[in-house]
Length: 612
Image 1 (spheres, one colour):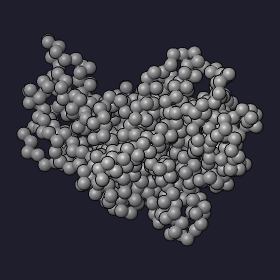
Image 2 (cartoon, rainbow, N blue to C red; image 1 turned 90 degrees about the vertical axis):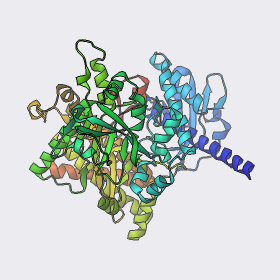
Image 3 (cartoon, one colour; image 1 turned 135 degrees about the vertical axis):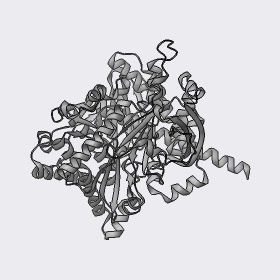
Image 4 (cartoon, rainbow, N blue to C red; image 1 turned 180 degrees about the vertical axis):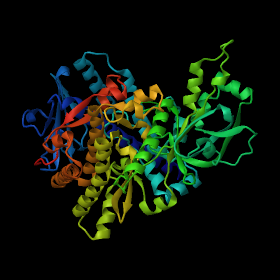
């Protein structure tokens, strides 16, 4: 029996490894074709030339209208790459149904695995761009693949945690994003963390854990608050401690605590009993899809901690000026709502009303500089946390909130996760599946797009409405409510927000919060139309070209309705007239080692109103 079980586990692990490698190949080819090869006209769909030279695996007749051959030229490498795909969409989404094959000049065709494909693309781009091979990116690609394999093979939750996951569909959706973003070369890369810690702390394995708690001299805590929120007072509700007089409670992410407890400044604060280590205690918290934002259904707020781990692009620390911006925006948007009574009852911004952190500035000794301002800033960022409004039990029961990134993604067997939701609507309203999918899509587009456009064009507020920042609420199986999060990443249009309206922000925060209109429009167009809605359409339309076309027409109609209701905007008029859509380059940004805010964009062909 034991031998059979071991054989089954070995087979299961092998299958998971194959799935992870296929998905990583998909991510790499998606990015390379969209961001580099297609703009250079090096991608061909079902080409008629050169077919007699194709590998035998590609000489089988196509399932007409369903399957396609995708040929990619690599001229600087004197090579060609070919792969078979299905469900090909106007913006390039597809499912790869074969291994990619490569042929170099003077050689024969041979099959590429994940490693050889990633090396091929990086070496080719090194030639084409005349720069060294980006070894760091290669390591991150491999790290992302390795982590995907680990996530598929491990479940670390306790029995209590599994029961919570079973009954709470919201956190289940937060922790079900097994693959990550399909248009990113390293969606699951996490550097600076051991395998053991990774599996203890990652949402993909259903993790939950207790927080570390510190008793801190209240005078050494720094808070930013909006409205009537008192973050320091709120933290005292997390667990019942008998604290010494003059001390307040500060929770810590367990990874951060272990990483920074040995720093000299922190040790001094412990030695002088300015900080008391209370250990791990209290109820269990669940990492959400962002990894560092934690959820507990018994608490009124998510807690977003710093995490000194490189997740996908960068170290995810809470820079104090970003937290300052989030609090300011929470306050400013609350005032706008009070003054104007904004017309979107089915659109909710998840407020970020307070942030708290350590401030050990008083430990700096000017006469004997044992520590530096950098030491203080390091711990200020390491132990900072941000409050984000959570869902109450009524909302969880009535709206059934689910993360859009999970719905518009594949499960671990490459089945679109949104399909059961469409089938529920189909059954509830006694519709055909196609009719239900169109109705579902229409409600979602309106719930997301109209408010996002209004805030941008009419209020000068630039959200980041990508899939992971979007949570969907339901009524009668229809997605009619959108909850948008991540205010610390929200920006303002400089022309509409004069500097005298943001006088309570530091200079560093002011520098980070302003975007020009063009810069803001690129972000809105990419996040809402490409990252979000185009992925919804991909998963909702299946293999039907007519469904895809109808869904893009719904987008066009929603934009047209916005123009009629709120006045014409040039950017929207351009879209309605067939103008291209800007798309952020995740792969090329990483390749060229640019900061995310300096990312390049490519222009994608507009699918609205086109005949497919």
